[in-house]
Image (cartoon, rainbow, N blue to C red; front, side):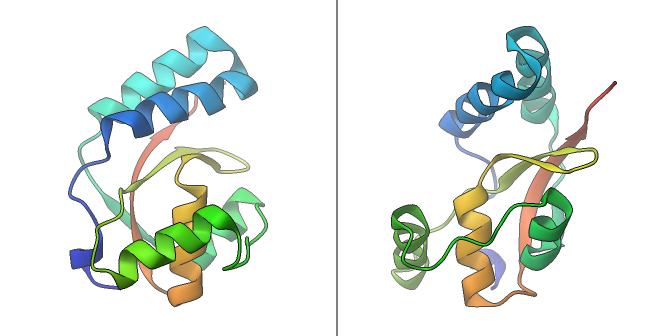
Length: 122
């Protein structure tokens, strides 16, 4: 998958979604700090879709999953996907973009996904 399938910046609602998800893991205050750190991170790090799934211990969703199917349809129509938001640790947390990772895997497991990543503090 080439860069033409990816936006250069995550969308604003991706950060809100990341904060919401992270609040389930670490509570509201820590989630807000992690989401803010992700917003400040400007460097994309490319990782293979298969490696993101392995590091996160998340299962691969099938191409028939409604959100994965929608992302696959976007790519085939030439629309761009938003970069993935990650929080490094063990396991890796996919703060936003799980369905986009799965869609990318179905296009090619070794395709690189642009990610914005921060490290969680203990």
